[in-house]
View 1 (cartoon, one colour):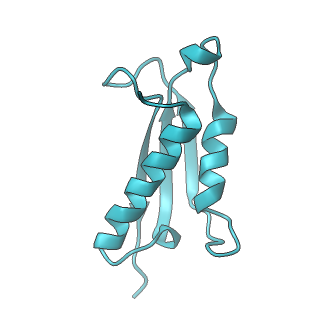
View 2 (cartoon, rainbow, N blue to C red; view 1 turned 90 degrees about the horizontal axis):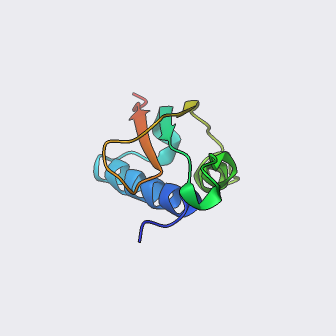
Length: 96
């Protein structure tokens, strides 16, 4: 239902991109990111950092969008809702 870490991260980044667009911003305007991850039961309760990074690399550090925000990625024991394997928080800044 929820998908693996990579699928969930791609979904989250897509939603973040849409919310930024509503504000007249893009992923290039993201200056800080915090990623909270839980272990994936399907992977023997191991963290799938590689899956999250694969999704991240589709949105940041590309030829079309070379900017990379400051990022913290941490493993947590649990998230508020069961099912998601990660939560992503971003801060964006607009150039004047």
